[in-house]
Amino acid sequence: MSNKKSVLLAISIFVISTLLISACTQSLSTAPEATPTLIATGLFVSPIASVENPMAMIEEFAKQTAAAQTTVANGGTPVTPQAITTAGGLITPETGTSVTTTQPSTPTNAVGGATTPVVVTPAAPAATVSTAAPFTPGPRPATYILQAGEFPYCIARRFNVDPDALLSASGLTSPDLYSVGDKLTIPQTGAFPGSRPLAAHPSTYTVTSSVETLYSVACKFGDVYPDALASTNGISISAKLTTGQKLQIP
Image (cartoon, rainbow, N blue to C red; front, side, top):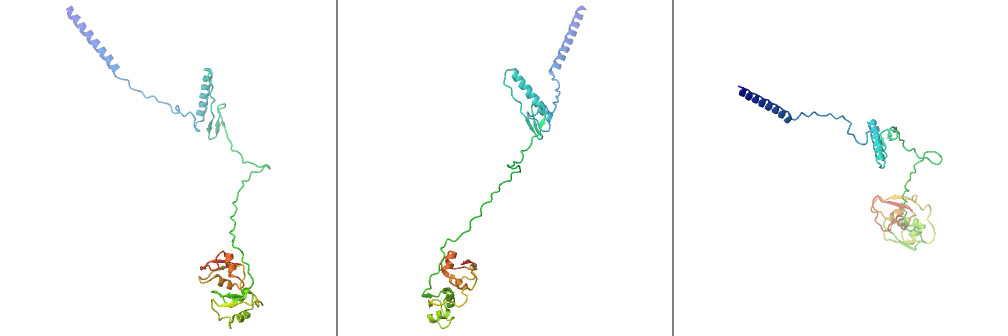
């Protein structure tokens, strides 16, 4: 009977031990649930505080100052805390306060007034000047060959001779009876009766037809020489004119 009690006691102890061991193993094998740790916002900030958080700037300077003191205590070279720029000015490490910055004033002159900017105006380009040599009329020629657009009275005005004497010396019976290429004899005495110019000049003339020549244009002004027209406009006396071309009349 005592043996049975011993066996039962041993079995009970074994069962209890097994249960205890099982309980310990289960509690150790199960990992505890992770509890998320809430991190307060604003702890991880930039070394340079933002404009919207001035207190963080002051704390940053305090940290820099403490670090500098620790460095000195350890025998190192202290680092000077740097000022931080904000929209309202500077936060200085000495005071931790905002210092308003100002813009440079307008420079003044010696008299005390505001300096007036100097405006440099580029010089206007020089007007183009004709380099053609001016025409100087010579003495009356002994003879003259009529060109296209010319007529006896035109030649009389040009050379300041009497038209009737010109017609008589040239063998012409009428001022309207002439042809291009006719050879006129120019009297060496006398003068044109009345005013020689037919239009005011100097002026500008616009060519009206491509058949016009410097000779015919000269006749429109009476006492103008074709050679002078060519010289003034820098073109050849035989140059072909175009409609709308502008000519300077000397």
